[in-house]
Every structure is written in structure tokens, then in C-alpha cells.
Image (cartoon, rainbow, N blue to C red):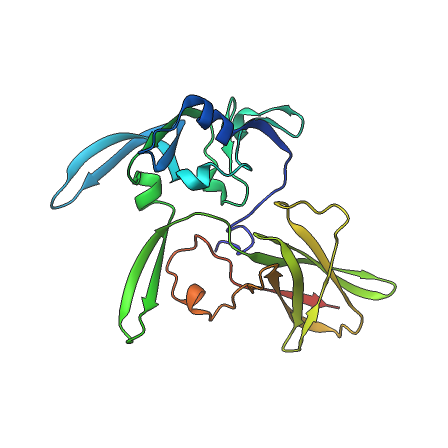
Amino acid sequence: MVSPFFIGAIGNALWAGAPLAAVLEQAGVSDAATEVVFWGADAGDVELHDDIRDVTMHQNFARSMSLNDAMNPENILCYEMNGVELPGRNGFPLRLIAPGWYGVANVKWLTRIELRNRRFMGKFMARDYVTIRKETTEDGETVWAETSVGPTRLKSAPARVTQGDAGHRIVGAAWGAPIARVEVRIDNGPWLEATIDRSEEAEFAWSIWSLDWKDAGPGEHAITSRAIDAAGNVQPAPDDPWIAGKQTYWESNGQITRRVQIG
């Protein structure tokens, strides 16, 4: 069983590199260009065998984004991580860092950047890293939609419960958007506003939050958190149609419940 904390796992690092937009502008962008494709050195054979296809393709890992998204001034072609040369496992000598996007978009071991005048639909855009969702139309019809994984979605998770002289404290993290507040529910109680640590807050890093739990009784308890971003969006509950209709674990940003045992 895969832990819900591993799916969509994140980390924080300090990245440095050249602004992608400046590089594209210096190279020259055709008026016809609409899509930017990032090609990585990692590659392998892909086989397609069915009634209409019988082919083996050698494909590189490649992902794309619209030209408008690529020109975001936050995007960088990264060659340093945490003040040192980019490590091999993290994409040396060059990788894309697109803040606010899921890790799959941040292509490692870049070999080339290509501009196209139509949508790129490689294996890792059209067949893998695709969210499959069942949706219901306004007239009640069930339809299926497949969308490529893109920008990060609002999420939070309770991480641990510690005990001190004043009682217990619940600590967790929230990320995916500028966080306005985090609320926590214990068992079936009301939503309680947590305290967010703003001392070292960065736009694209996680926000650490905590809630003092003074009257924790013995036994098992369920702890759920939900994040609310600066635009008022609320992290969805498990029964929200956005989550309930999803058949793949990509973009799984539903509320997470942890169960803890108090002695």
C-alpha cells in the first residue's frame, strides 16, 4: 500500500541558474511558436502493439508547456542546488525548475529545448503522467477526461503529534499556493485554525503550521487538515467530485487524515 504522504511528496531546496525567458528571448522565438518542449537525456524503448499499431520507439523523457507558461520569469535553467554544483541525481549539468509545477515538469539532464507550433504529445505528456477523471455533465451524462499533470495543486498534511508539559501539539505542512490559513479537525469536531510559521516563509516553499491540542484523551484519534489559499480556494475533501471521480493518483490533493494513538 502506498502512503498518501508519499504520493505528491515534496522537498525544499535553493536553486540557482539562468532565467528561461531570457534564454528563449536571446535565442529568438518565432511568432508561430506556441509550445516549448524540454528534452532530457534519460531514454528507453517504448512498445505499442494493438490492432492499429505495431511499433517500437526509442523515446527520451520529454515534457512541454505552453509558450506563455514557459515565459514566466520564475522559471530557471538550473545548474546549482543549495549553493553547490547541481548533483548528478538532481539533473546535472542542467535541469528545468518551474516553481509551482509538479516535479514531473521539471525535466532533468536537459539536452535541448525546442519550440513548436502545435501541442507536443509524447509518452510522458499523453500516456504517462495523465490524470484520468470521471465527470458528470450538467444534464447528468457521465464523461471521461484525461489531462496532463501540470501546476501543483493546493495541499496540506498533518505530519506528527508531539507531547510537552502543556499538552500535545499537532504539526504539519501546506503547499501548492500562497497559504492564507490552515484548519485542523480532530475526530468529528469543528475545524480549528492552526498557527502558520511565517518566520522563514518563501513563495514556493511549504508553510509549516501547528495547533496546540490541550485536552487529548487516551485512545485513537483522527486528525485531518485542510489548506485555504490566498484566493479563497479550499483543499478538497475526499468526497469532492474532483477527488472522488479521479481514477489515477496524480494530482491527489484531497484532505489527508492521520490516525494517532494517545497513551
